[in-house]
Length: 468
Ligand SMILES: [Zn+2]
Image 1 (cartoon, protein in one colour):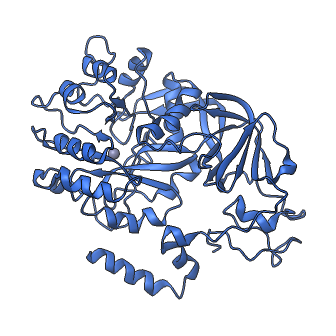
Image 2 (cartoon, rainbow, N blue to C red; image 1 turned 30 degrees about the horizontal axis):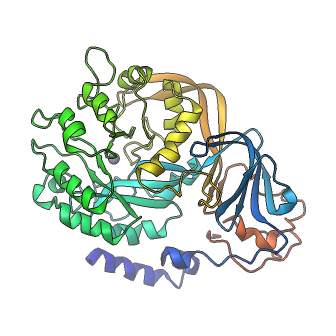
């Protein structure tokens, strides 16, 4: 609570000097200005034309147009006329997919705590997500029931990225061994109670980094997950003979629970003879355990991934495990990891499914990760480059690849939040957009107003980015 009140004082003292910033930090509900009413004769806010749509849930894999209205997907069809929309963007040659979901992320930055994932080891999500097509991240256990609310007010409520959370079974969260090895702070009941206070926002329970011989972290996590009806994700910590991987995946966890760091090789994931998946993995998958990538800083080896993918044991979901230790090492970002998995042997369609419909289903958020009419309009427009690329793993081994995915445009809740090549913008020395008065219906970027170069008047409705 001390930290929370200090933070509020800081915000208050900054209000006068930075009024736009102050508005943006007071909470998600107040952050967005109301949209201008759409003209009655225009059916859509935005159309993406001529892109190659990959929507795993709806079995779409072809060139289609996608129309958006009021933050929702309004239509997906062979052709949707530009005259029906306030704004049309031609995305020929690019891929159009649901906004990507990164199932394993660490975003509890800003507390000032050193060496802690509830502090300096975490990263501010918006700097790593929207620019890679990611619109939703699932924080994998940075906070527990004791500090979740601090995380929420500090980061989750202030971010453009949709941040959903797996609560750590440790009440104090991922703050280092002093906390994470303390079995007295692993309380399934208290954790479930907090999860049930925030349904839809708390989407799972995480246990991680445990070094002891006991099953308590897993057992308490399963109690919490069962009471809150959400999955458990396991980073199985130190490999201990008293708690074999086989028992975790085939006795302790429930179908729908998630094993992350699947190709780390740290905990008997690989069969030592065949180099394919261990019997624990094979039997676990048969009974419905979910296998997540989570490459991270030290959790992915080609010596596992290549033979196991060859054997058909591919991930259910592709995730980064992004934090300060992985953001500039082998993991980089979600699309680099996806490109790496294509170099390992997955198809483009597989990696897209593993970043969209699959993780949405795993966290029971099926309104995300698809382009069904009526779904939340989170969209990624991706470029697939062909050339010579190199990908590395936790032991700094390299695998060469010939394809690299990158993000061109990212749309969240129906509005553009990232546009690498200014595809929505018009040339600076030409006329302004005739629908500039409605621009905040399709973009978060400021439209040209009368005080800038251009002829169209502004509505006075500010875009919600800060114009500093
Ligand atoms: Zn992690």
